[in-house]
Image (cartoon, rainbow, N blue to C red; front, side):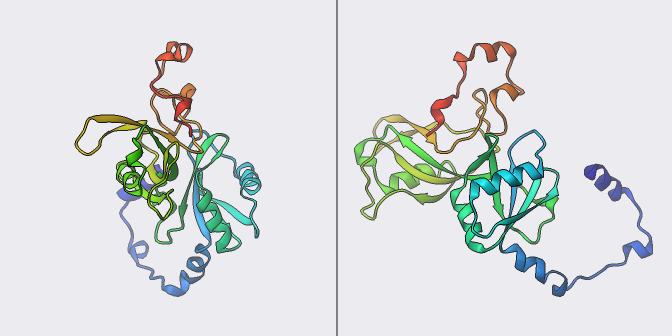
Amino acid sequence: MAEELEELWKKLSFTEEEAEDIELGSGSTRVAIKRGKNCVVLKVLSHRSISLDTLRKSLRMMWKLNKGMQMFEIEEDLFLVEFGDGKDKKKVLDISPRSYEKQLVLIQDFEAELTPKEIELKWSPFWVQMFNLPLKCRTRETRVAIGRKLGEVLEVDVPESRVQWAKCLRVKIWIDVTRRLVRGKMVTIEGGESRWINFKYEWLPNFCYNCGMLSHALRDCPNSSENLLQKNNNLQDGVWLRG
């Protein structure tokens, strides 16, 4: 309905009274901007409609906030969360990603200049585990070099020595969730042979084993057939992507 109205307005000829400009000064926006510092916008990556009350109750139990929160639907399936203080907001942003009914919850900082329709939620932080690297590659520099090919590197799990001996390398990366999950990368080390480095994602919610997208599960995949659902041994993705 909103899209139809917007297209209709583009075709209208405005009267002189309608075209008269109203100027809003800082006094009209100051309070909202101040309160917005403790706000985030939120969306559940799901094709199903989300109940505000049910989502609110679930997030309150999950987040265990010190000063509570208020939650509002500002656009269809797009929500604004106002926290009691900045510490609760930081806590929630730091523990992302999280899921609701096994679907990824996207959270983004408050942007005062945007209308709800202009807000695009498509990024989420994930800790990515990297396997099958030689011992000489267990460095901070290796983590950053590979991580940058997946998205913006937010954090690197490595001590001050810049080397960490562990089963895998861990990097926190800002990932575009509108693209399929990257299962691994071919890496050439010091001009030698290329080798396959496989990835696993921590706190990975539902995703499609057929097309690798986070927006739906296999049973909802528009590209899957009934035969594929019954014989899923040919699927290109699977539970092994979960770290």
